[in-house]
Amino acid sequence: MKRELNNGPNVLKEKEIVTKMIDLYCRKKHHHQELCKECQNLKTYALMRLSLCRFGEEKSACSNCTVHCYKPNYRSEMKAVMRYSGPWMLLYHPVYAVMHLMNKPKKVK
Image 1 (spheres, helix red, strand yellow):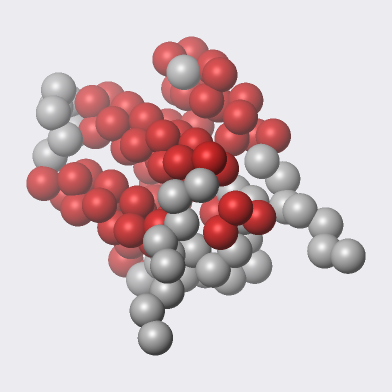
Image 2 (cartoon, helix red, strand yellow):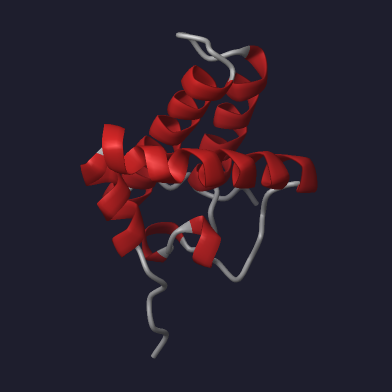
């Protein structure tokens, strides 16, 4: 049985935020205007994982998630991207940074 892809508004916002963070990381850290092959692979993987997230529209930010669905190598790469891009997001994309910080885990009833 195939799982349906998540393409709701919350997941799309998360995809936008992840894309901005990876773009910023590659531009600042790797000094590329376009995504390098490594960053493109990470972006593709991250967007796929968001599309397949089991929590769907009820998901919180991945850093707050109880289920870590990334493979270990991609998880460490994404941690590096978020650590580096997080502070820069406040300068370059303040709206996205605040949206990401406001995405706290939902309380289960």
